[in-house]
Figure 1 (cartoon, rainbow, N blue to C red):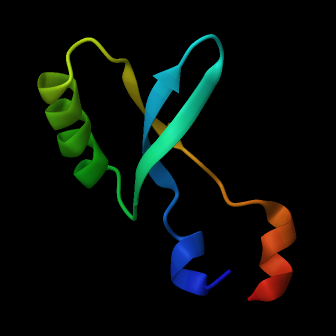
Figure 2 (figure 1 turned 180 degrees about the vertical axis):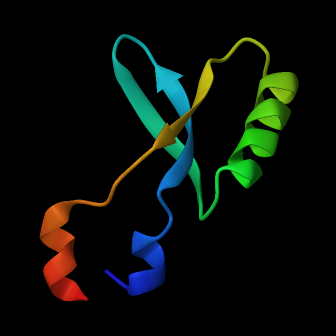
Amino acid sequence: MAYPQNLQAWAVTRIVPPTQWVIISCYYTCSDPEEHLQLWRQRVPNTQFDLVFDLPDSTNYRDL
């Protein structure tokens, strides 16, 4: 995994019942996904979205 991909820890997710989620997009900072999260909630009101801090898998660090 490339170094810049490891920095994209903020993600907008779509909640899929019962206990799963799907990453829609990843971001470097927290402010960008907050704005996109609001947009998703307005555009698709019957779907649950959330903002998560998604750390990369620790096994990927050896690839740096």
